[in-house]
Length: 137
Image (tube, rainbow, N blue to C red):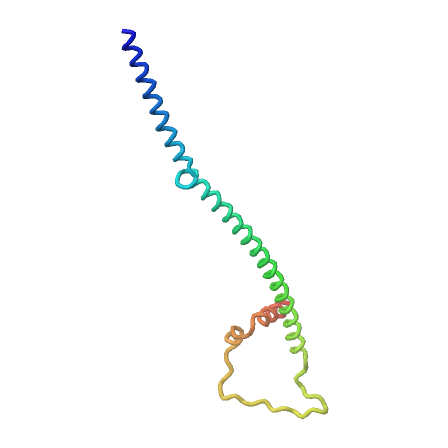
């Protein structure tokens, strides 16, 4: 009876050893940097690094673009204000000729003048706003 128990004990030990050997092979394949999960983790880590670099670069470029757009917007607003002042000063000029200048004849158009609402739609936006302000005052 002891002999059979020893044989079963040796068989169990050999089975456990074989099972451990197979598990060790599977674990090395699992952690293999070329084909296994370890390789996938390494590739994903490299991709995360590349994406974070690209994101930082995109953020810096968008920040520069935002600053450039803000500068252009401020310049455009300043130019618009100067144009409004120029247009307002042109309206202040008298249409009567001075003493030394001959009178200019205005050409007579064959088409009737468009209604006031059509003129209002075709005139530039800054003129429309300035005329609204004058009318409201």
